[in-house]
Image (cartoon, rainbow, N blue to C red; front, side, top):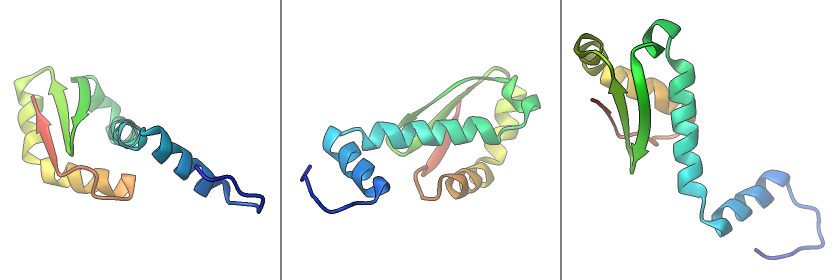
Length: 97
């Protein structure tokens, strides 16, 4: 990271720091998971054990087969909504297990 005597925007400085520390990927995955959890209705959250990212795939562990099927049938809709929330095409696929 290069030091400068001229004022810089905080967002630019933080972006440079995040890239220099090598945490851009994990930070982006954390944002995706957080957005996913926040966009789910409470009735649905009760049926999900955990979720995690691996590459550009979001994995969601669902407690019951009925809920897994319901979510799976609407996976493209969920993916589009999630990418809209995140503001990028961060998730290429959602896998319900």
